[in-house]
Image (cartoon, rainbow, N blue to C red; front, side):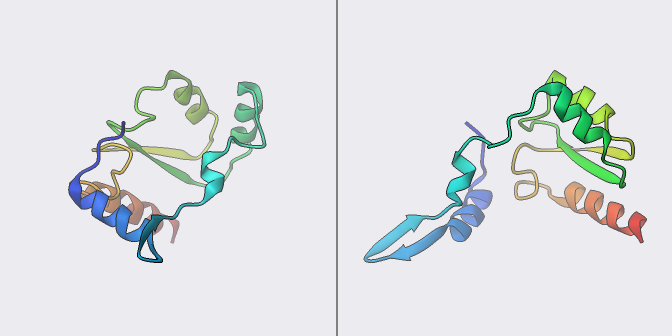
Length: 114
């Protein structure tokens, strides 16, 4: 289960609920629930990542789903112009708690691109 603050839950509910008849239904892109049509092995993933040449910033949430996946480090090493920024929080770090570190990291990346 992914922890979610009441504030983040309100944002997600507002965005994902729609009126239907006498009530409401949850709307989401059904494609998010299906496995990818492209199943790559680790060598193929790495080969694709090595082709990324543009400056790239990855915000890695300290308590996020990817915070402790060992295979992620080799993937990050494959991207030549990658800048990794640790931000506090979990999966919804852009919605939950202090979002200033996320905002600062994105703004800094965009400012550097100018």
